[in-house]
Amino acid sequence: MAEAIISIRDVCFQYDGAEKPAVDHVSLEIQKGEFIAVLGRNGSGKSTLAKLLNALLLPTSGEVVVDGVQAKGEDDALPVRERCGMVFQNPDNQIVATIVEEDCAFGLENMGVPSEEIRRRVDETLRAVGMEMYAESSPNMLSGGQKQRVAVAGVLAMRPKIIVFDESTAMLDPVGRRDVLSLAKRLNREEGITIVWITHFMNEAVQADRVAVMADGRLEMLGTPQKVFADTKRIEALGLEAPEMLAFGAALMRRGVKGLPQGVMTVEEMAEALWRLKSRA
Image (cartoon, rainbow, N blue to C red):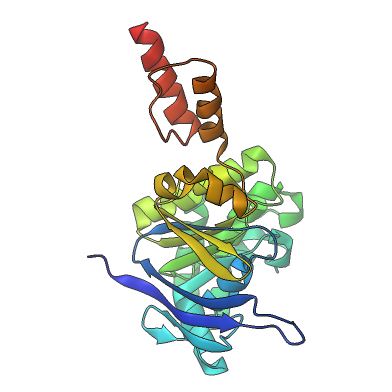
């Protein structure tokens, strides 16, 4: 059985002055090397949960343990963040320097990493995210997707075991969303980094190993994308929509198309399934 790198145990968090918890008795284990998507409508608690994983917030009650470190006080914040980096929705809120390579080095300088090691890590991580040719550029001259790549590079340079993407594609165009998601998947697949992908885009969630669905601060559904999205009535009751390809497949079957596999989730899977049907015709 895979090793849990994050353990969330009966966690509650309530903002000052709020009438009810933003996260309400949530328990969840995330395995080392897993790519898990956390879904939910606005106000569901998914972004609050993300901040609890990075010790930006501390639980009102319950336990959050990140790679063996329990986030229970301010002294735990740095050890947690060394293990778990975060990429936010708006890259402009995360980029602090006027030159790309200087921004990538910022966190390392604060950690007291030697200059030669900083240079090596900056070059390495900018190559990893495909931004090495922009090392001496101003972030202000970059597209939204490129800025997010720079934000990822700054996190990646710190060598975290976990990266939380908190709706990091919400402000991007479709090309930017695809590029950042592809980067996260590659870091997961090739580097073994555990990815927690907070999103409200169904078509992003279907590419995860598991999907967690939140509503009103509670964890309402958990399982593989195939298992979670197969329960369309429950998904709709939680204010979400079925992934586009799942809805498209259902529409085709209603129009008399026979032989289409159940649970087709992605454009690539749908294209392959339709090609096979055409080849047999």
